[in-house]
Image (cartoon, rainbow, N blue to C red; front, side):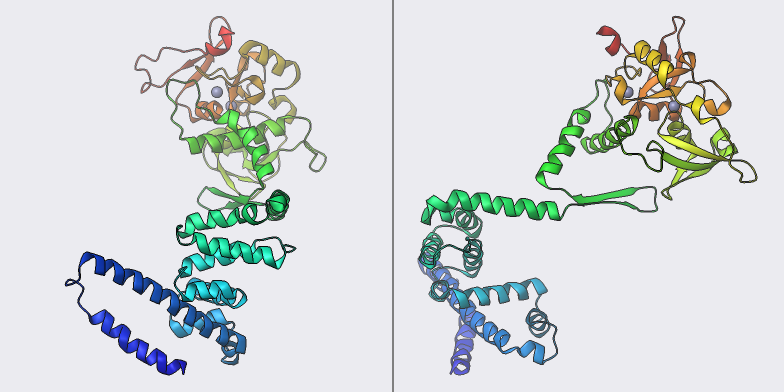
Length: 417
Ligand SMILES: [Zn+2]
Ligand SMILES: [Zn+2]
């Protein structure tokens, strides 16, 4: 009976564990390792047969466990992953007698058996049983040379060995299946964390990711500045925001509620003026006054300005935006982001009010300068100062920590061309 044999085996195994190893010659030591490896494989096969029987009888459910895997976890105190692997191997050996024999005789180990079973399960459903058997035989033979990772790769290409004439078609079908699944599982979330950060998570299929990459890649290159402080990850993040900014500046996005797409922020009048306090985005997020003043500089944000009693004030939306003739004149003059060393062309740029429209200054050529999103942000941080020089062209005064003498600089990049 199995239980008697296992009892003997337990005694023998305990003796093996107690035996000293330091007296053995090198060759014997390696022989012993090989033998133990084969014994473990055979024992794994025996364990699989028992697990299969337990599962087949529904013993776990009879004992009120939700599944055999859960029952194995509780009973053997193993992880759920180990329990599921054990069950999967048991099922595979039950279906594939040749694989069962290979494990029992130690021709394959448990890891290899799992890899071979997975490769066989991936074969096309309409492949004849002879070819499936042949694939199994080839892989069991290869298990004598290959560790599981290489064996898995061999398994992926096994159809080329046994049925080259249908391998290509099967490859194409598998790829189509994979693509459909990937597309089906596409998802994108923006989740506010409440600490000022918003988490992006999601999955795209290959084609979708290629479109995103194509849009972002040109924007991810380091700038022509002497000093590029951003990490590659930060550059990618900026690129995503820039692409969305570009999209909202075109006329081609669908309307939302009869208006061009925009961000609405509700902000008390004195917050906008004093550069203190916070505003609320229509998405529920919070923005500092500095950020609001930057976004309000051009079309990306519509501030619903509240008076001291909470009433909405009319702030003359139209005169705030650099559009039409003023925008064209700005583009002609600056030819792109005017910040020293920046190479962004006009379409990536906001019109920035040199003196804020919030404080009553006009939206005009004399009070405007083109800045890309990144440099617009820097200017609104207030360390660099932008002004128009004697000749009417923008110049930038660096902070003392960049240049102690604070000599004004200009963008030579656009003017060179
Ligand atoms: Zn601005
Ligand atoms: Zn720039």
